Image 1 (cartoon, rainbow over the protein chains, first blue to last red):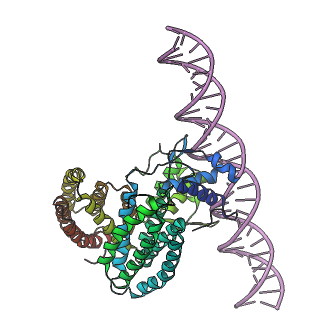
Image 2: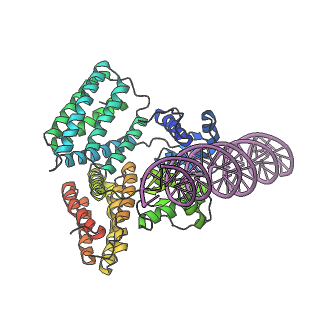
Image 3: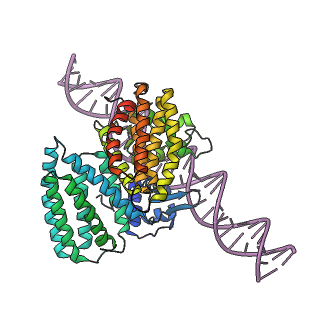
Length: 222
Length: 222
DNA sequence: ACGTACAACCTTGCATGCAAGGAGTGCCAG
DNA sequence: CTGGCACTCCTTGCATGCAAGGTTGTACGT
């Protein structure tokens, strides 16, 4: 996670991070119309780097640039949560299937080592009822699995999904803290299933786990 | 597929398409260093829109901008073909699993209607031995399945995979034309498996089919 | 009162100017 | 002949100027 406000970063990068942060945290609503000068002025940068930032965000699907009007923040689509969850499940299952394939013992070992610290951290956050912190740790846990598979394409896609999901979680933080420990336990189980080379069990666990994570962190029904 | 040379398109868009085309077709090699003026001059546009095009291509993973040096065309990574195939399989399987889920009859019907023309076209191209044309039709066939699922996130990712795959196919066009009819037959089988709501059969077919497609269109071993 | 036309403003798209930072080259000393 | 150094050129990063297009508000006519 890059620092949001890094004075040493180039102006275009600062504009990109600032606008993205505003969109992901919900500081600007879907449908809002952003102007380049309006964004650049508070940052003390001119229109050019802001324009470049808008282009990057358009490529990520967060903005839509309408010529000579401005940039509209694309609203989260109605079924987007389902879409994201479905793709997450597909990518993560595929990652585990590669991890349990022959010759991936080293990658599996590295993953097993990495998750030890992550699981401990999660259980701490769950016990403390830190929903926002747990959400971050949850994202990191799942991303670590995909990264461990060594599939660079999948890893890149998965990072983009994390952004989208973060955006969907707006306003639903703070509820159901009592369920966090359950999610943490499920993480531990799934890590064990990877270590045991049981992709079917992992996929079955993942299916329910993602639904429950969605319910707790994104405000759906348990 | 947008027209590559559209004089009415804005300069930034023209630069984007031109450079992307050059990268995807292999006109510029991986590792090449592109300069903004060098790209803009033949198109009669200045550095600014070219710079914007570079940023978009960097977001897509096709370029890497190194400050005050230029833009290097990122070479295709060693295991990229495998990575792309794996993600394609994951996304496409997930799409079919949604398509066969309850309440998706209308989407399945639309897909069935759409593939009729695609299959006929493919068989024509296969018979004619038009490898490049078949490659396009193949991409469209698979993309149509993902689109039919209605998962916008997956559809976007899948389009990006098509670009990457197109790039990997450089230089391998023209071989094994006799196998095209087999690939076309497999498409027909897989379409039938979707219509029959048999996702397991589809996934099994897809696994072998993608490997064979890779072999024929991308120059791997059959 | 309502519809229409005009005009002013605000927006981006692009070109250009300026400055900063490396990389490569040529020269000089040993 | 070789190693080190300074210089020059080429590159991008960003600001700004200008023009084109769209939207909105207003005033006028009916």
